[in-house]
Amino acid sequence: MVTDTDVVVVGAGIVGMATARALLDELPDLDVVVLEKESGPAQHQTGRNSGVVHSGCYYRPGSEKAELVRDGRAELLSFVAEHGLPLAESGKVVVATRTSELGPLAEIERRARANGIATRRLSGRDLCSVEPHARGIAALEVPSAAAVDYAAVTRALVDEFRARGGVVMHHAEVTSVATAPGGLGLATTAGAVRAKWLVNCAGLQSDRLARLCGADPGVRIVPFRGEYLSLRPEAAELCRTMIYPVPDPRWPFLGVHLTRGVDGSVHAGPNAVLALGREAYERGADVTDSLELARDPGLRRLATRYWATGAAELVRSRSVGLVARELRRMVPEVRAHDLVPAGSGIRAQALRPDGTLVDDFEFAVSPRAVHVVNAPSPAATASFAIGRTVARRLSALVAS
Ligand SMILES: Cc1cc2nc3c(=O)[nH]c(=O)nc-3n(C[C@H](O)[C@H](O)[C@H](O)COP(=O)(O)OP(=O)(O)OC[C@H]3O[C@@H](n4cnc5c(N)ncnc54)[C@H](O)[C@@H]3O)c2cc1C
Image (cartoon, rainbow, N blue to C red):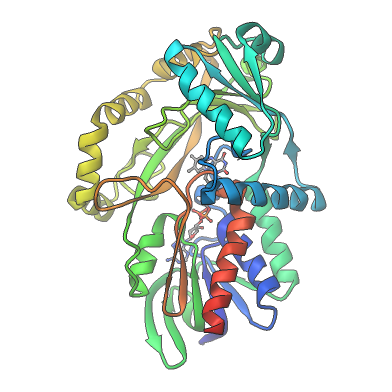
């Protein structure tokens, strides 16, 4: 049987589902089908993250990240409220523990101000009144940070999309895309699909899908695994809200932090280790992915530049004691025996051939398709606005 539709969205993560929703608003006369290779939505990045609704204090003013987080978080929070989904409006603190971190902390404060986000500068003593077990020489309080369950948000998006007439097919992996008269012919593990247009929200596989569509995304997705630990319930009071270090401005990850989720449990992590497989959650290796990475000139350039950071992260990933030591810089009472393994997630991070990690969100258009090329954190926070951006780009393609 062949499925015929106007638009296919590939990927039922939060970006794919938010895009599918926006397409129904932007192009109400078109049929939209979402194709997902797994047995349900949100099984990759969307269901394996920190659950933080970022405020937008880190991002360069004027960047896609700054603007789409600002618009997207507002829409996400009203969707969460409308659907009665869990939300923890805790706020967070970014803690400087060394004098060398005061400059980068001031830069975060400056960016927050430019992005219209309220923050409060805390002395070491003020910090204790917000987070009694945290210690630092200075900190920034960001009251608008919150936590949600992104998998639950995505499931609610699927229900709403279906109620509005959209179709979501599971076990439907797109394996090839060919140009057909008036559109595209897709081979999937659930049968053939004909569509006039395609939207690529395939996360960790998005560069491959773009190439299947005949487009050159100009990047390769590099998988960075992040491992989580959680604080045993008896130690969970060591973190009331969320406690972050000052991130290394040269690296696109936020450093190992403590976050209290919507269920009250406190997670520590994630670190950032190069994964030898795009979906290798258990530290194994995927032969195709590893060979592809080994041959990638961009990755070799990146490795030359960041070998010390990468090696330190790798060593830390093997030792709960080293994670505890890192956390003790901010919360001196954390002990290794307070921490238990709590799963992992893999980030899809786009890398250019010159070895540069793409910092901002990035999109590309090819004949009959729009591709989400780079949507790493905070793309879950920004997903509703990313969806609207992509839907507008597809609408322009449809009109052309
Ligand atoms: C460890 C970690 C922590 C993070 N923390 C946060 C956070 O606290 N806050 C925040 O805002 N963001 C966070 N992020 C980022 C956020 O989770 C992602 O940016 C977001 O989930 C991306 O959503 P997505 O829909 O693009 O990707 P995904 O959720 O990965 O979805 C892509 C989907 O495409 C499907 N797919 C792939 N290829 C095919 C194919 N060929 N055919 C059919 N289906 C296909 C996959 O099965 C998958 O379901 C974090 C990410 C990680 C990994």
